[in-house]
Amino acid sequence: MNVSEIQGTLGKLGIRPSRKRSQNFLLSEDIARWQVEAAGIRDDDKVLEIGPGLGILSKYILEKTNNAVFIEKEPALAKFIENEYGANVICGDALETDLSGYDVIISNLPYHISSEITVRVLRGNFRTAILMYQKEFAAHLTASPGSRDFSRISVFREFYAEAEVIKQVSKSNYYPVPKVDSSIVKLSSREPPFQPDNIDHYFNVVRMLFSHKKRTVRNALLSEAVALASTKKELKPKLESLPFSDDRVFKLAPEDINKIAEFIYNLNN
Image (cartoon, rainbow, N blue to C red; front, side, top):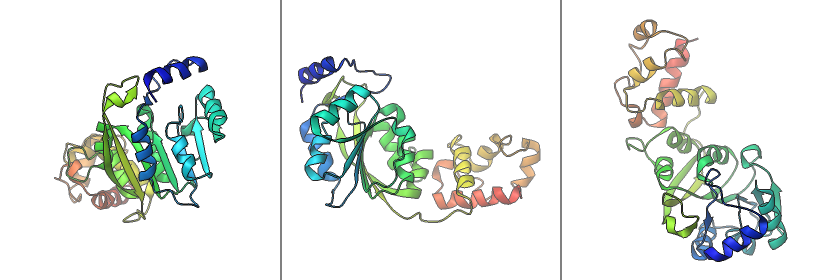
């Protein structure tokens, strides 16, 4: 697709691309075809595309399988995909739709909801996801412990899936041109490397720690005293035997965080 074709189609549909909603349309057919090939779609796979837009990925997905579902929030685009490709389209918000039960998920994600969508994808029962992200977010998502990019989303992803950046994409491949380059990430689902006693508590501790990821574990938790139903003065002596007390938060492995979560649980019970 070229810019004039996209502009013409959007004009007919009465759509003006919104930066607020991250409406940037991929131009390169080669990149779209490559993304779908990278997904390794099998004959019996159930496939999901989130936000198909004008269908640059959709048509290559439908060459691989008839068992595909497309979620599109914009009613005019949903109708276009349905009419143009005879596709099974859900007109709705992916943040309010069940994303579980798909073998393969493919999407050029709207940047402003990348984190929320990724959490929902990771919690679903998928095998492979091929997702395009803002380059900086992809670096955080795929980071390993000890990296300055290691963050809350990194820990969440490490628990559910392996991840790698498989292609860099210049912003010039989009219309309108976004402010940043993109990265295509491959997520491969796996069994969690460990099982917390209380998974909600574990991820709550992850949130607390990574709100202060450059601090030591001890200082990060002291900064969260109120969330721990305490004051700094009351909490300090309770943290004397805290595991990894002097380590920087971003250097913690997920298993280390689980030991810290268990310690905090025992403090309060």
